[in-house]
Image 1: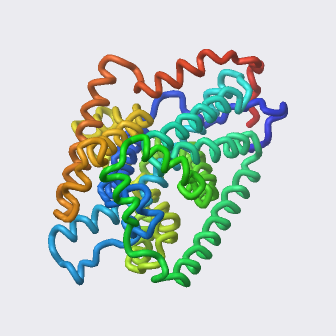
Image 2: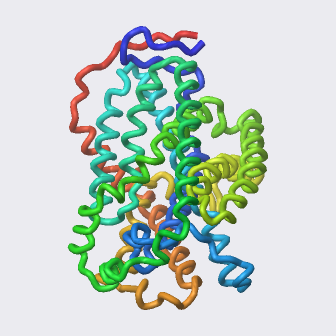
Image 3: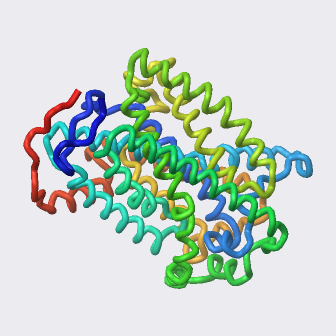
Length: 416
């Protein structure tokens, strides 16, 4: 029975807490990083870039209509947008929750207080996200993960019943909020601008780097709305990730394979039709990205896990799973690096590809995503041949290692 710890803040080891690294988690993280880039690349290459979303650009809302433009280029763009939008955000959140459960289990086995050092880890992540937001990319996700994970870390010290209630309450609240936002969006349909403002276009086509940093800081309250609106979703998915980890969804063996097949069947079976329906409705952006996409993300866990099971990639990652696993092990570094590369390639103070190639079709955008993806995959493989973790992961460890652990609990008793 899952009961609260007898001593406040003291962790209790879970019977199903894994001790070995789970390759599937790394492959899923690597896949999610490339999926995140597949979403963000359309922001970097659009007129007005990050600010375009605030000034009326529908870059992430409208998928090109294949009926009005049945070309191969339009089909490729529509498919890429549909496949990427919201799925990687949800998938990374699920995996962050699974990683949180792993850290909790590790602390429990060592008899350490919880959240203990994880609080510092979350604060470091928040600081890192703040720097990333200000200096690189306005739609950063790290800050939201940091805040939501602190709440979920505390919930891990509560009973299973409390966590279950919190999970479903967060999910219900999130769906209600997204429903209200969808109704509000439908009510004001047509009132928003049809494209980015000339000022936003000039900022990213001709403005300097310092001007773009200043613009992010001046509009920080609006640019940081997504993690606020999606906070309940993050709490829900973090707790789902904890459940999946403890249920064995990422473990090798027949039990894990059976659970992954169920995720594949139900996640994609229900999620893809729902996601297609919300995509085709022009004013259902919030339901599309924040309700339907997380269901598909659960199906992706099952799909990728099942593919690895069937083709033997879990025991010895092949030419595809291997690089993805390396990128997953350096996920934080890869996430920041992909945005830095896209910024330097697309914005005016760099190569300015966004303004030079705008209007030439989607193929160069898809090619840019593929090129950066190959750099990330090859770079992570080469880096891990010499180092045991990514550069930002190593920086985080070095900083946290300098923080003394004030209290160490005695070995916690296992209550079964």
